[in-house]
Length: 455
Image (cartoon, rainbow, N blue to C red; front, side):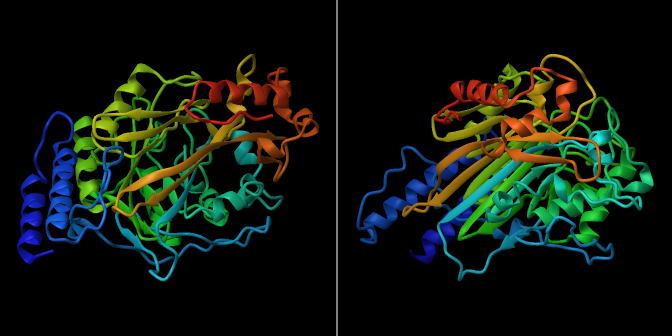
C-alpha cells in the first residue's frame, strides 16, 4: 500500500472520529474505508481472491493506537494463600489500558467466558468466614475454576461493591463485600471484573474509592470496569489483545437504585447514556477488532427480554457491537442473534446469578439459583474481520448450606439429584430439584437461537 493511501486513510479516521449521526456514523464510515482498501488491493494486484464482507463487520481500517491509555499501580495489600487449591493464573489487563500478549503465542482464535451476578447475600458472606474471623471465598469458584482458567478472557459481573471490612460487610439492600472476595476472583482466574451495577453506590464514594484502590494496589494486572475516580478514567476505552485480536469491552448500568452520583464525582459509575454509548463504541472501533458491551439492564426475575433491553440491543447492533452479555435480572434470559443492515450481534440478554442465597421464600426462588456461563469463541478471518465461530451457555447452580466453604457453584452437568436434595434452598422453595433446573434451562434454550437443551 502506498504512503498516499495510508495518509488518506488516517485523514478519514481523523475527520470522522467526532462525526455524529443518529446511529453511530463512525461504524458506517469504517465500512466504506474497508471497501476502499479492498478495491485498492485488487487494483494493485495484491489480492489473489475475492473477499465476502456481506455478513460480518470487517476491521481492516486503520486503528488509532494513540487513544489507548496505559497505567498501573504497585501492590501493598497481601493476599493469603488459598485453602481450596486456588492460585493466581491467567490474569491480564488493567482498567483503561491495553494488554498486549506475547506474539509468539498462537494467533487468530480467542475463547471468552463470562459469569453472571456474584451476589454476596449475607449468608454467602458468612460462608467465607473462618473460625478466626478472617475471610476466604475460594469455595465459590472451586467447582468451575477449570472453565475460568482455561479461557483466554474470563469476565465476572461483580454485583456488589468491594469496599472492604472497614465499611462494614453487609447484604441486601445496601451491599458491601470484603476485599477477600476480590482475591477469590483473582485466584479463580478471572481477568476482567465488571462493577457497573445498580449496587455500585451502596457505600457511596467511599465504596467506589476503596474498591478502585484495592484493585490498583493489590491486583494491578486485573481490569476493573464500570466505576471511575476521574473523568479521564471514565473516558478510557479498555482494549485487550489476545492471540492477535484486539478486543474492546464496555460496561454500563441502567441506574444505581436512585442513589445520586457522589458530590464532585459525576463520573463515578458508567450509566446507559445513549450519547456516551455511541461515542464510546465509535472510539472502540478505531482501537479494536471486536467490541463487547456488558450492560446491567432489564427487569428482575423476568425470564425474557424486555422492550428496553431490545431497544438497547438494537442500538448496540446498529453501532457495530459484536457481542452483548447482559446481567441484572437475577434469572436467565434467552440468547439471540440480531441481524442489522451492516452487522450481526450475539446477545445474551441475562446470565442470571452466578452465586446467591436470597432470604426470600416461595415459588420462583429456584429460578434465582440457576445461571449461565457464557462461552464464546471468536476467530480472525483471512480478510482481517473477526467473527464469532461458536458459542454456548453452560448452566450453573448455586449450592448453599450453612458453614464455612459450604456455598459453592456447580455446573448443572455435574449436579446430581442427591446434591439437589441437600441444597438448603429447598426450605425456601420446595419445588427446587435437579429436574426443575433442567426444565428451566431448556425453557430458556427453546426461546434462544441455537442453544442445545440439557438432560
